[in-house]
Image 1 (cartoon, rainbow, N blue to C red):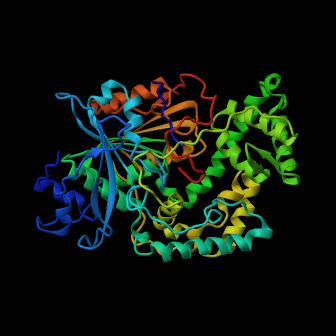
Image 2 (cartoon, rainbow, N blue to C red):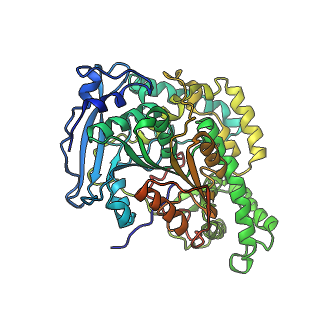
Image 3 (cartoon, rainbow, N blue to C red):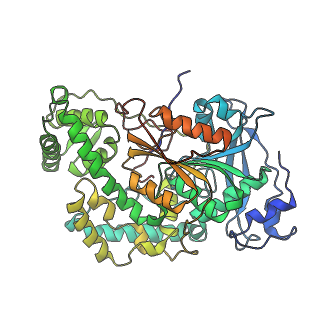
Length: 520
């Protein structure tokens, strides 16, 4: 069976000493043995084979968590978890919880992919644990009842449509409150970190080991801040800057897209005999923007979709993850605009796992907004005029995506966060890995996380492109550093720079992460 490389876009025996780790804050007093919160730790999950078409060793279960950790005797949520027992007796170190990103990304099937790609020396030390975060997928999924049109975000800023964008953003926030108002305030990163610690306790583990990609790096960082003494070996791949959640990180997509675009124009110019887009970066850039102008004048069909210039810009932001793919795509789009046949195959869509329950069609968007807006409501201006001003400014600063990233979003009309934003500032050991040319979570964001996690070491793949490092096939050096840490628990002596093993140019990314324009 062909194995897919991983790249981006979490026996019950509860001891009294484990109970304090599932309290509502890192400094809260231990919960009494008879408290409602303590009783959650006594759960004994019923494990069942996830799907008859999957290996018998891959099992699924559900655990109960409080909707509101401050009132654990109240309503409950289901958290879907999975496990793939891969550890070897005598070598077992514990469990490795994973998160593939988001917010809004399901992770229940992630252990299947990790089992296929992790080196044996790592697998034999861990049982692989996945989970759908609260409100996501099979974990008490949230819905706002959004139409397909209401689910389209980010939106391009245009003066003539801005009033309608404001109305739509307000309507989304209003519908979310109407459909899920009781649940919505509690679908936050802090509460998901608490859920992770409850999973750790239910599984009978003293410490939690973790592999998080993209948004999963912020989730992991918040866990280290809330539960430093429960933090085991933590790998944070393609990092979010905790100082910029969440509007700042979305705006960072536009900032990161520009250097990736310039890198692409240089690469394509050096290969003008192959692609014919221009023999200088300036000519390649002009070729692309001429295509945008043509599509704005007369949208054209490509792979069953009508494309205007704005839609092509969103495609290009992702396509510059891989310079060869970006070049091929622009060539094919130029053919389509001219009415010629195209050859580039459509990007395959990953099907939902067969064992997944029916979930609301808007679940990804609803859970994304719950976290992006609810984690840090103060980061989102309340005055629509500010978004207009920012979008106009950033369209000039970052032509490829600036007006999308700074346009108004439902968070402008969200309720105030129930908790303050988590300030990540600790000395807990962890390993950060990052590609130099990742435009989704740019290198500057990883450096921000590295500064906040003072006990961390960082592995940077210089020249590495795409979103995600470990198990991508992009850098044997980085893979070895991560595997060594997961095997031994020893961080590199100092920050490390790795080279890419092979140019990662053939695709935008090969990823197990749910593909969505809003994801981290």
